Image 1 (cartoon, rainbow, N blue to C red):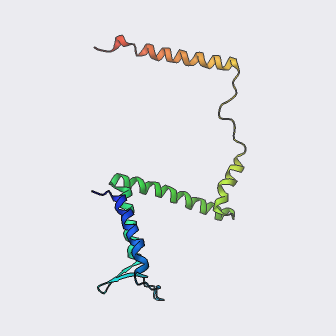
Image 2: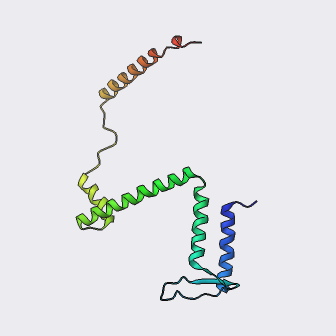
Length: 147
């Protein structure tokens, strides 16, 4: 049995071989879709092909309702972020791509991730940590556990 991505690859390869030999026409002024093929008087449009490809790719990518929810949530967050940047860009009169750069510039230099500790501070913090760890270990003494 062939898996879905392999079927899509095979279908795309067949389509690539068949399309050059199919009758095609340009979209009309009325907005009709481009005809990719005509079989027994029935037409297949490029719009139908594109929709089928999108559906197949979407189905192979989602697979389950939880995956669909995850994809929708991710896309929603991305779209909200894009819109927020667009609104801020309009407000500032700059391109959206410049908003983040301006924000970072306004924030100033980024401090070091780890503060420079003196040896005395390091020793003090180490002693505090060890004391806390010992207190926790004592609180969970094995003798208190049944068994």
